[in-house]
Image (spheres, rainbow, N blue to C red):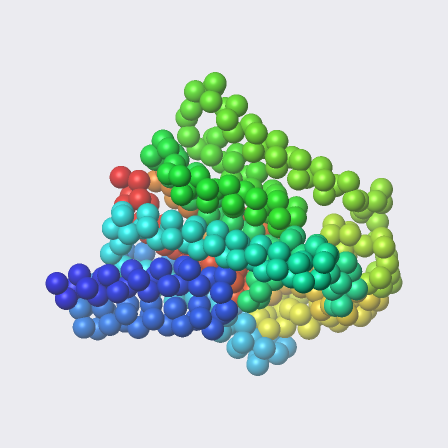
Length: 407
């Protein structure tokens, strides 16, 4: 009975980590601490034997070790230690999840609880935006930071609480949608609660108003089509949400000027030519030069922003220097920070996740790995706590439990 109780406590601590992802980091860190203490107790008192590690656990630990090695040649050791502190979950979660004994039902409950938590958080943000709109008499507000008029029901203005961004929260929404679609695959139906939750989450995709999240949403739907074998006549059921994703692309593209690829580094933040695409091209241009100058080892953890800022100043990239932009591309960031070795391990994580998901017919694992790939194309998702914890947590968890979930 005692052993069963500690297993149950560990399950609750894992749920605690999952539901606090969109909440303040202090609360999420407390949840991880609880998970760690209970897991350590199982090792010491219950003599819990570590399960055999899979390739993803090894790769995440290797990813951390490469960062640790790069500290030896970093230009800012203090900042490097701070970065490694954020990266600690790359080392921690592979060990902690090796002590877990989750059942099929517990895993299913965990995923659904996360889905409901994300939907409730989204509804809460919509209610706050509604309240603020009633107070001000307008759905728009002035953002003093970027001197822009913003819709309170869209993008960062809607969910920008507790360090959430439209990208990170949009990833949570897309993953939650994949969980519900997985329920549909396995049970051939959805409960009324899950249908309502799915509608709320799909509405959330539209409210995020982000190209990357629209791509993520479309990918989740596309993966569903290629992952399961369904009769041709049922493909029409999935055509409507795909058209919806295309509509979001079209609406976003309407606002682009003709010269969407053109930019001049000297243009300041108020220049109307800047858009979400060409400003990334400017960042990537600078990042590639930093990579070339520090090939093949990179600049080391804690030094990437310093080197980028120096390059921004050298090229007179006014906006980049003023905003202290990162590379906004996880692949380039790995090359800048830890060089070729860091990039290779990151790519191996992606390929290994896809391989395991197909091997064990795990649609949810495939979805989260593809979300990591997509978000990594337009953002440095693994330099922010909410991205690091989310992806490491779910990729490790789902890679360890493919058979439990689908047997």
